Image (cartoon, rainbow, N blue to C red; front, side):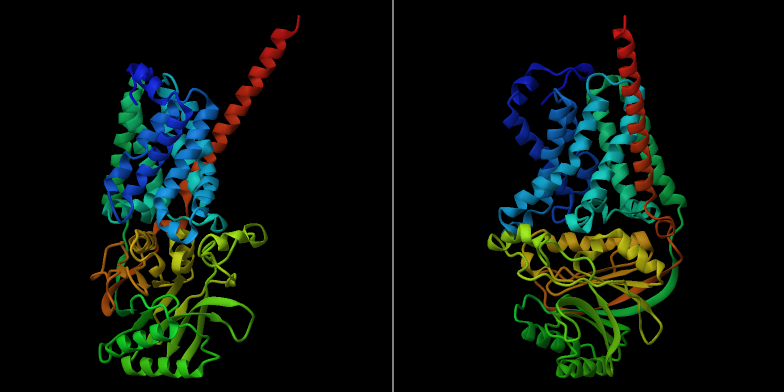
Length: 516
């Protein structure tokens, strides 16, 4: 694909992309490119230019409808690449899901052409630098709805190990990071293809650099509030729940005399309801007495006091369960329940979709340890939702804990992708996050999103103690919420109103001209 001066398309581009099938394949590949910025490849720097081929493709579309199709196919390609590790579980159904969710990028593709096609002047280029990132955030927001799969693979999450980006996240959440990344990509596309808008593009890049430097230099950071000693127990890949419990018990015994504040087990570490199995409660209570700290375990079982299967974080002290319990609220579509099972239940016949829907919890919980430390538990992919950790901190949580299990996807990108989300949530909230898994990757991040201690990989069955720094204060993001999203929606609404008013004026003008 090549572009001539001022956005004129050369003959080579026309020959190469004349076929709709060829163009569709290019759109799929261009959309998939940003996935390389996420773990495991972690080419984080690629995110600053990965959207450029996709933008140039949609810009060159012969019609708005074709640009919308480029947006759809690119979105499907992105989702397939980011979630490709789901293929062994969902098989062909992952293609269906990617095609459906890719539709959220249809407005973005159409808007790329609307604003950048031909030879846009400085005003239209400036509008593109605001509206295209806004439309991207709208797509991310829509697909973040828990019933559409949740916010896995938000573009800003690719910057989880970049300190300036983490500082930006503390101000505007992952949404602000995504917005600025798209601004940079649009500016680069303008520099490449639109000679008349290069000054505007350079100005936008300067603003992005200045914003990053300003936040890095002057934005507030968390104060120090002491440290706590947290142990993470990672038993490894053990499919039999009873054997998994036994392995966790043996590892936890190694923690005697380590002066701990909390011991964390991973998701589904206990396979039976503790109320129905008092023998398991007694064994956990004995472990708590031995190590001198409460245990946060995760029960994945049918409850004895109400119908259905729940995934629950349960706090166990020296006398047994303390009564502190959190039932998982946001379930994994197809993994833990089938959306519209009467319609989509056939997914169980082509993959490893849930045979029975798990039940949802109804409220978030902040647990209090004997020493007064307040912890906010999350289960599995709930750590992908920025609002959940933000609300826990607003409720008083001093430490965030996510219990996870990705053993089904042990040799894929999934474990590293999941662990990286903890860095974003910690930076956004100024609260450390412990990411404890059954089989790796387990990791801990401090209140600035910085790694604490070493991580336990997918080949590890062990226990590790972390000296975790606590953060003091309220981050701007916790205080103000996703203001970047609100601003983007306002910008798109204003654009829509202006477009509607313009269309109305043109219709009136054409009507007046038609009258004798």
